[in-house]
Structure formats: C-alpha cells, structure tokens
Image (cartoon, rainbow, N blue to C red):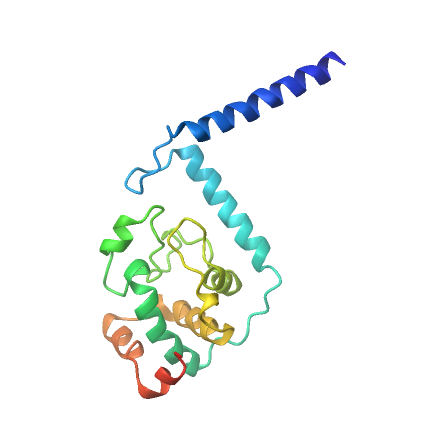
Length: 180
C-alpha cells in the first residue's frame, strides 16, 4: 500500500510540475531559438510515428504518369517551393525563418530532414499538414488527385535541373483548368 501511495504522490507531483512549467512561460518559443535536444527529439518522434500511423492504410496510385508530373509541378512551384526550395537553391527567406526548418525536397540523399519519404506519408502530410510547423493542410482546398500530382512531382524533384524545373512548373492553359 505504501508503494501505491508513493507512486500516486510522484505522479501528482510530476503532473503539477509539468503544468507549472507550461504555464510559467519560461520555455523559449520563438522560431529563432532552437528547441532543446530533448524537446526536438520528442516532437520529431511524435511527428514521425503519427504520420507513419495515419498513413499506413493509404493506397498509392501509379505515380509514373507524365500527366501527374506536369500537373503537380506548377502547384509545387506556387505552394511549396518558397519553403521546400527549387533545384539549385539551398535556402530561402522562409526556409531560414521557420522552426523546425522545412526539409529541402530537391535533394534525395536522406540528409534533408524529411523522414516522410514514402509516397503515402508525403500524401498524408500534404493533405493534412503538420500543426505548429508552417505546413498547411492542402486537403482543405485541393482534391486527392491534385495532391497525388504533387507527390509524383516531389518524387522526381531531386533529379531535375533548374532548367527542367522551370519547364515543368510553368502554368499552361491545360494545367490551369486543374488548379480550380
């Protein structure tokens, strides 16, 4: 019985301490001040596990259709490139100002901070966004086919030269019809 009382008391103290810390306002929350290692680890682990769990049942369509690539390019350029960059760019004002720093989707070496490399995970992130990260939920304004087109484009993005990127992201009258 003593052990149970001790565990209950420790639990109450822990909960009160956590709430006290949260309400104290002592944690530096500015985007220009990095998280501590422990907080960063906790947030990244939560993000990775949550996205993996939420996306596990998503069925990935064929993403090798050139029409998808052409449809996804202009959307990526207009909605994503300012944070996730274009070929030949290593930073932007937005990518430098966000915390956590958005992944550079133009590189494929696995060292760009994007642990959502699977197409089903990318689809989920684009559709639902990530709370308090600057990543919007595009599913509120875009249908699934349009989001899959962006996923298809992102898969090819690391292979593109700046010139190829410019060609594939130009809005034409045919892909403007898909943007509404």
